[in-house]
Amino acid sequence: MSQRVDMYNKNALKIGLFGANCSSARTATLAPERWQATWPDCLKMARIADERGIDFLLPIGRWKGYGGDSDFHGTTLETVTWACGLLAATQRITVFGTVHAPLFHPLIAAKEMVTADHIGNGRFGLNIVAGWNEGEFQMFGVQQREHDDRYEFAQEWLDVIKRAWSTEDFDFNGSHFKLSGVRAKPGPIGGTRPIIINAGSSGAGQAFAMRNCDAFFTSTGSARLAAAGTSQAVDEQQIFNRIVKQVSDIKADGRKYGREIEVYTQGQVICRPTRREAQEYHYYANVECADWSAIEKMLALKNITPHNTAPDEFKAKRMLQASSGIGGYPFVGSPDDIATEFANHSRAGFRGLAVSFVNYLNDVPYFCDEVLPRLAKMGLRDKN
Image 1 (cartoon, one colour):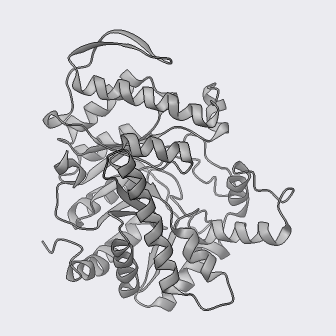
Image 2 (cartoon, rainbow, N blue to C red):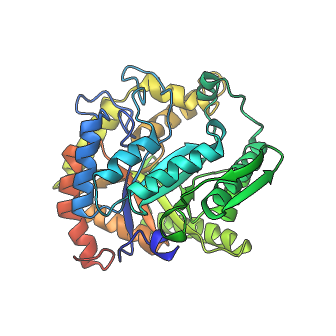
Image 3 (tube, rainbow, N blue to C red):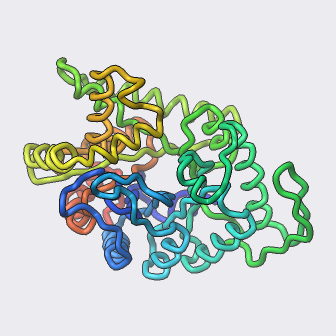
């Protein structure tokens, strides 16, 4: 598994592109240049990322979207078939599929993912989701389980998949799946299995990830944005210390299960030649052009509404959701600023970052030209 987990290269800090299979990606904006997630654009993006040295592509498992004036995430490409197409068109980049366990029978999912793995010669990864968006589950006619029960189901689902990937023939007698005479050839490439990641934030979700996954995604965006929203000067060291503790606690939790878990986070990158240009564009795209109706619907899914939240608090949460690229870390500044922030996350213990852009085709080439060489000089990226 070591080669899979390392994603086939020597980069100390892994960098991926996040959310490009969904319209508007991670920016709830009405800006006309926002990402449309068409297949031709995704294909161009993947080839640029592959050629420029980006390590992975991580899609969002989205089925319905959030509405709003932009129809935020209303147009999406299914993630495993998306991965198959991109793996066939690239040479070295890892491409994940994001799969909702309750919506796919595990044997079908196992076969789909093995097919993707063979197309990419071992470059497929699985991002497993236990499910949370009630409206999407209703669309499928699937009843959401109680929160902790979702992870019990996901555990059994993943147990079936791992056995299908590694066992000749087997029966399975569980609480949720009773399977007889299972055969699922071929197995994944190289006699190993795809790298598995998860981003469960609850206690049950994090415990599931610690038991089963190679990498865990957590969010660090609130630390910086909360500090930026105060009247006091931003204490960079305090923010860094909070992030260090966050990563350290996750790794310590993994060791309780006898496992060394890699930790990743996600954010939005707005990189321009000067910090002022980046900040001005960030305000334009994320705030001036914000799709407030979509943002309010996302907050309502978390039970945050004007009816149950004080006006000032709701206004602050609404602004936080917009400014952060719906909950990510705001990497906003010049190439030097972005490289420094990335390096700080690496020093804090993160193995990698999954980042989004307002428009990948417009922004990724400049990011690769300007930020990646700076990270290479810092020793965080391979110079080749």
